Image 1 (tube, rainbow, N blue to C red):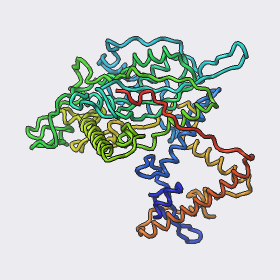
Image 2: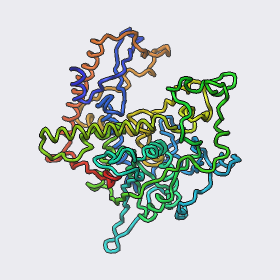
Image 3: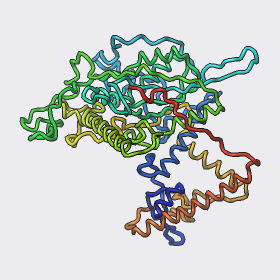
Image 4: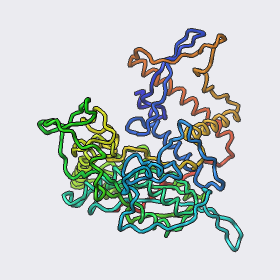
Length: 531
């Protein structure tokens, strides 16, 4: 009951409990720390808070008219990842995307070779700004800085109906799985190419989601306006070539009588479980490749919308962009949501048909997961042992498989970040955005004459006169179930009190008749039913 009420009031339902001892008074207090999960199946209140924070981050950086300061790379929460690196050039070898200076040290030239069949990218001089072009209305003289809402998809793997392959036997699940496992690298390439071709440092806030067929696609808020022809040319010329060994045949499986390859500490590598012969190393297996094991490309369906800041369309686009961030890839659409006929009056025949289609949808998830669970996600993936090759930089313990979340059923190949934000989107880290939201709440309360609770009242940095820490945080030895419930109930009472104070303060500060903006979260995907 406490969990249900807490969830209904936005209080974390599975907090971490820590005991705080006051060295001055000797008093001990149990403090709940929100779990911070971003998945509603784990903790709905924390997931909703995380989604609202992302909405705030997206809005703040989208329609800027001046370049924000670049985030220092030294900040621990600056979310450093390949999407943040402005001038990086990556190799096609599928490794940890080494910069160009490392490429020049390599003796293998295939990494940077342009594959045949892909058009050359358009060329444009690179500028240093991040805000894009300014357009002036000749009649009024008014300046406009339009931005864009962009949707990218993958190609077709077979005909789809109601989110399920019409013919599962001919549906290319293997390619779908490899595309999902390499989608993040393909997206990296797209943004790198876009910056070289747009003429300025393109900044974006993007979310990776699943279509109804469960293939990943990308929604992105892009600052500035880029010609549609340029975007389509960049999409057509963008690819990720995985120069990996062949993944056509599994040499070893856990069901084999002799089992998977085993680690030989003396040799520092994996050997055949029966013969003891050392498996080929990564360098040996990739030395003489004639072609990449897989080439990931974007689909032809690209949706581009121009939007102005401060408009209802822009606000709805932000909310739609963050709509599915609280769901896993496999759980984005429930079987019922993946079906047509929502307006049909239920009857026994329709319910039977719906149950059959739901079973087909679950089978579709299982078939896709069967491939993403055994295919490699990177050169370091433990699944390479299945194909008779030692992973890059092998270590002991990989015989059980890869531990990357990409191989889990919930993720279906997408185990990385669901939100991709360029470094100069807003010039702030997510922690700083969170602090901004807290500061707004404090200002509203103080304006209404309400003194907010000191967030640092139990800080470990507070000291006694002799310089020792006043408050000591530690993990409790034992927590009874009733104690846990009591703590959640206390958090619930505190949250309800704070909410009442904040609502009263907002009401006092708002002019009569004002209210929050409204509007539906429109489906802006032009590819919801794409094959």
